[in-house]
Image (cartoon, rainbow over all chains, first blue to last red; front, side, top):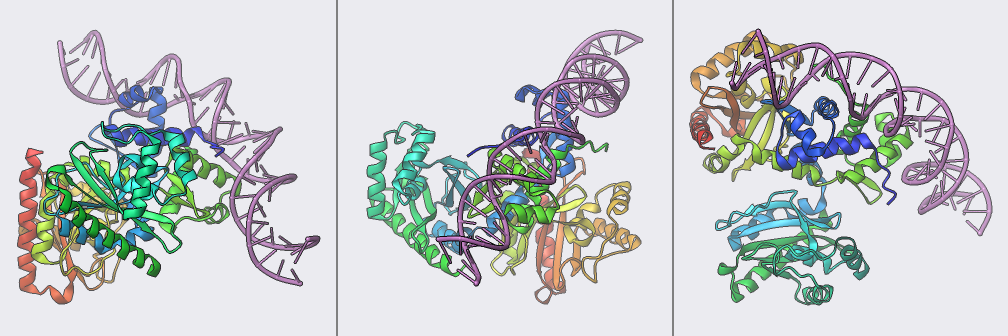
Length: 250
Length: 250
DNA sequence: GAAGGTGATTCGACTCTGCCGGAACTGAAT
DNA sequence: ATTCAGTTCCGGCAGAGTCGAATCACCTTC
């Protein structure tokens, strides 16, 4: 983890991040927000334009569809993504709720694909969205199949930050839950990331028992009672299982 | 169009492009492919890793899901995308074929969204995919509503490159077709981009008659005869129209 | 298990280039 | 006309990127 850097690269991507997060803006507005000299920001934006990753429309600088392209291409190369293909849609249809495929990246859970079932509530869930592992069902599903040292290291680096009032903030509680995930074969989260939301997730393991991702179903608490939970857990576990089998053929 | 650049930024994105296109690779492999010194490539990859846009998995460098995230965020900000929402799915279901939403960016047609109908053939179509304007139905639909000088300028810059044997390579023929697009309200392409494929596309205009995008349906020639074409044209025109109306409310 | 090979990583001095203050410019608004 | 906010241009200097060479890491082969 030397972390050798390069000022220009760093700054270029800082600009990209800013454009992505708060929407485009003018040169001086961006300079203000990032606390950089205007002329420098201008230089960078110009450089980014020549790469094709940024444009200037309507007096505003914007990221281009190049990011979509790169993102989709790399997603297409991910084995889990290919292996899960139709399963995710089936899950969404069967449960009626939001079905997502997530992977772990840089100690976070990242959504790779989303399928909205017929009754899905409108979540702020899109491919690429990231969230802390400990605060979500899919995150816990994945943590449960990582070596304990890895889990410790993650807690060490990022802490157990509370996202809602119900987020797990105690390591012991977390480890207990991970144990029960391993026993039951699925993880559950009740308003630990979004108040009023229940999520149920199953881990996807490969043949050497490495964790590769998780399939997750989310819906409003009111609609998901005890029996419904078992049903969803079964659906999610089955889908994860099929994916696991597919993985070997990819 | 001064095109002021910045070597570091340029090189960083050249690397990203390379990773996206040909999949990740090792340091020296990438150095070879891009004709750069190994140590330099190593420096850049390290810098890219600290930005979070690249990782090293399995001895291979890979782009991360950050690209997906940035791409999806910016797509979400595009008015056309929001305006078209459900329409695209309806089109896919009604026609049974591949339905796509495209916009123009940097003189090219870019896919923003894809919906596969029940009978859709497996195309290599994904969000972010780019193609020349003159060789596709949606491209022609958009060209038809650009000022002639703009069209001339595009031809000037990129020429009318043949993608298949049926691609339009003659400017006069193109302008004739654009005229008929304006008359009929939709554009058609018969194997001009992909042999054996027929695409039918309608333009999306905003209230000041600016071209904002195009809705397109693609299917195999064998399945799309004369009458089927008219049906599809109607579906596509209606969807574009609804989108146009939605645009005013966004 | 020694030798050889391939590729990744580190190091550091030279030099090129990114940096940014200031000036010029553009185009609204008054 | 004048003002002002924002953008673009310019150019000399310091600091940052560059890349050859050395080292390290890890296979394969004899």
